[in-house]
Length: 427
Image (tube, rainbow, N blue to C red; front, side, top):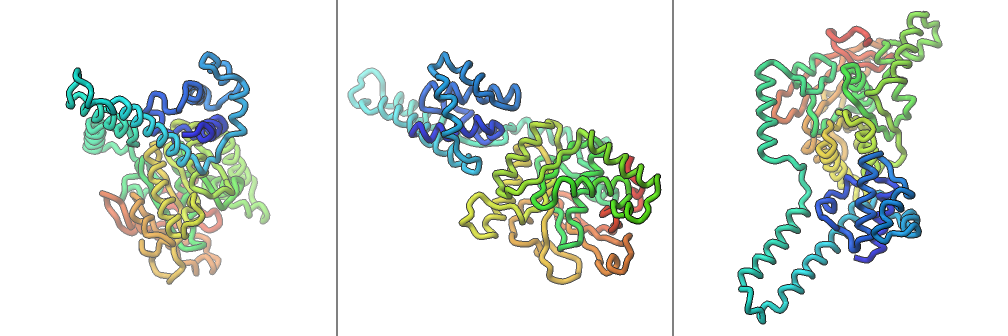
């Protein structure tokens, strides 16, 4: 492993320490880099990030000086830094060099075993087995949950359900839906899909608003709408007042309701919204980690919308990129212990109730999702001036749970989905 390749990784981590979570294959090894200076830098980057969520190069220089790291080397990190989208390749390069180094050391030890009269062949076999087993064990990337811990989690879930407790489920706030699926779970991904103009983003923002009202930490990553547009929609959902009502003589009470919810959102600890023009999945992953770092109690991340996210290899066709994006989103859910809720677009074909086969660009979305919600409305109702209309949610997939079709309501002025039981405005 050439030192400049290792410097690319270290420089990148010094600039974006949140990418440390991408380095699990290296962290499991005691000294993954080729020399004590670089290992000291790597260790101190982790330490600073864990303590403060950032890296100060001056502190990095101070804390690594005993390992022969001078200021010039620390400040050259920024010049050597690689690119965030290549983080996986940098980790693989460093890991590849580390493993080869360990195998070389082993081979040097056993090369003259035929002339060794003190140790037998079994001793050398044990050294080789132990070395290879250590490499394989530490190179494996897992969720870190033992079988015993997984069994205990199932026991606790079963006991809670037996007592009628469903607190570990994340309620959507749409009662008909929650009755059917009980709610969403962390470490899983769902898809909220609709044809254009039906309301996939409105459905996602409605569910997000409902969850925030329950004290659930939510994040929203948009590659389409601005932060202001998202907040405007949420304020409309919560106040039951459309911002366009201001132009038609909105009552004082209505204005107070709208502004009151804007004030609430300004101080709401359960809401994070990020708009990005960098649609690569590596950037989406970085934003998700940043959200989780900012709010460790974050439970749900909404992403709008799936087919607009790009893979990291632009040479791949659209379907291959979406397949990869879908798989990585499920990994992010597990890694961050959150639920990833993706808006997705359905093919325009037909006006009938959509099916899973209508998911645009990829069959892997259906396979990777734990839940799939297909939203459908008769758009002629809205076009006729009837803002309050019927909507349908098809629970087309609920891994291990119930599926079915639900009839709810949609208000076109406030872009809010609801059912009769949850019709009242949020407080």
